[in-house]
Figure (cartoon, rainbow, N blue to C red):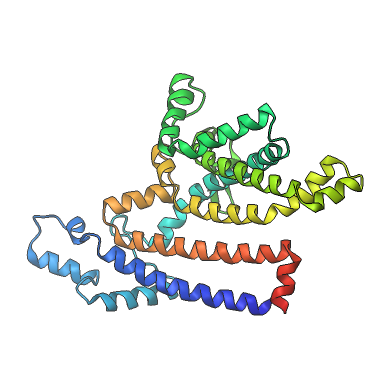
Amino acid sequence: MLGFIIQRVLQAMLVMAVMSALVFIGVYAVGNPIDVLISPDATQDIRTETIARYGLDRPLYEQYFTFVGNILSGDMGRSFVFGMPVLQLIMQRLPATLELTLVAVIGATLAGVPLGIYAGYRPQSPISKTIMAVSILGFSVPTFWIGLILILFFAVHLGWLPAGSRGATRSFLGVEWSVLTLDGWKHLVLPATNLALFKLAMMIRLSRAGTREIMLTDTIKFARAAGLSEWTILRQHVLKLISIPIVTVFGLEFGSTLAFAVVTETIFSWPGVGKLIIDSIAQLDRPVMVAYLILIAFLFVTINLTVDLVYALLDPRLRRGRAA
């Protein structure tokens, strides 16, 4: 097990090294930040001095190695637009995105897995057919369209919930959280619902497919022959056997939702990292763009490693295979 962990960590370091180079080169090719930083009426001396101050006059490879050295020392640069350290800027916005993602993905999992198991256990019932029809809508309807409909119906027409922003927050461990206040929850419901619908549909279909497959196995036949109740079979056998693919999807979807909640945050004016990166792209704030993509790559590498370790905990065969 220790050897597996060391191997995966080394692989993660290699992936991060390659990704840092690709991200830096890719972002470097997108526009010229000097056009944003300096007024078109500025003199050539001012342009030259600004370019030198930000190190943009040096060769690309020198800028890259300087960037890597700064990252290893904990410095991801300063924002061209906000004039503050990039890491501090991202960490200010991260709690908003993190709580939105957690509420959406956990809610989708807690609702989707039981619904999917029921649809797989009784596939011909009217309720099961309704559940699957709803899951098709979750896959088919664009996120931005659902968000606009939610705002139009619940915020504009009914006036039950606010259409945007984050609402009141409360500090916990030095971080502001909306989930700790009633007003924060009111602002959180619509964007979290919008973000969760696709995940809900995925969890329903995944759980249903796993349940249908497992219900036909000899394991379930023997459990019924032993006199176990249907509830016990579902809880101890079906849920346990479908847990590995669910853990995989949960981990990957959590990472992708955290990284790419851009549409939802933009529609609902949610002050998270997604809205920050959209603003940074529009303003060619290169340090923010590079730091964001590097952090996202690190996030996915970490999630993949965590999922592999959870696999080993859920399936003893994997532990024995790695030990051998």
